[in-house]
Length: 88
Image (cartoon, rainbow, N blue to C red; front, side, top):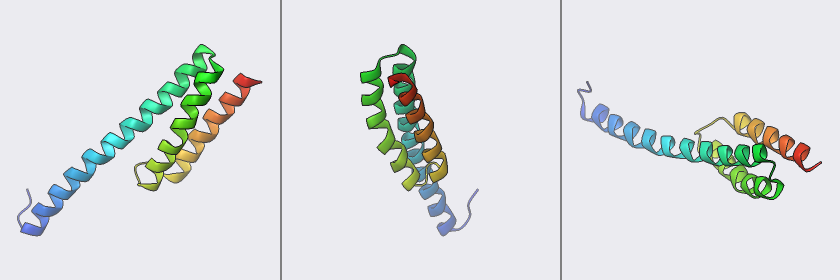
């Protein structure tokens, strides 16, 4: 348990930031899932539309520090590759 007032404030800040990051991470996972479901169904148009929305969301999460930049880039790259295979 925090004793000093600064430590108590830090605990509150961490809790706030954790909640925000959890929400952002959840949004990213939702958008990735939508792309993967569209890819699985074979719907090229829906997959492209979902990817177009998911990519900036993933990169925004990376810029906010929710996920690492390389992780977001890797996920975008792999989804784009799967989308390319579907449209070929």
